[in-house]
Image (tube, rainbow, N blue to C red; front, top):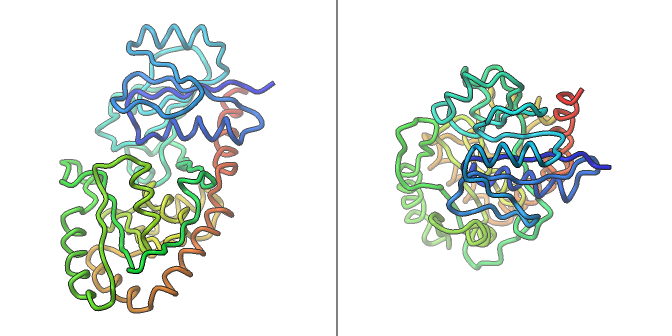
Length: 311
């Protein structure tokens, strides 16, 4: 009989808890998963009857009566005597109370947050992506123009430095690159304020996708881009890269590692190599995702953590 894990989210977390639940139920041979959510303006999108608990009291009751073997909290928690972990997805100032007061095992998304001192006692864990879903399957652009895509979640600067992904600088630079390469049939496409499904459809039409070039780590955008089979640009320093290497047991992520100060020249060098080169690089990224970041591999990492905490 499969063990039952419940993923509990208090806010959206970019749908990460939903993704874990969907992939566990689709690919795990050892666990089945349920989503419990407290508040989410857009609502969860898992299919298997997610449970809405608007108060801590209702959440506690569902957890106590649900016969769950394990609780996977996301970004926050409630006190309950069930084997559990907490999983941080956000900058430390979003989770300061939980970071300070939670006494059981802590996890943190294995990118930029994993190297911050506030998360020093957390185990880095990977973001999951069902690369075999049609939404994330390899898509070769058939558009007559070479398209450079960029999809910031917001179009302004947040007060927290780690969440400023350089929208203003990137958008301005893309305009310059577009003007310079008009005669080469190059266009830019900035995607924001749209649904995930719509955004992924637009990304599928691109040849090059930019995650961000300001901070030190990759985001889900990079994984989505590589899953689609796109040449992917991201600023990624060695410390964060090393976290990913150890976490996933890999050599290198096939990102074109370019920082903002070099982005104009870096993009131009890539454009000058031509669309055939760009699309061939994209094919490599898709193959890499299949071999190194597939959902079964990611789930196995979490199953190992669950089993360690259940002993």
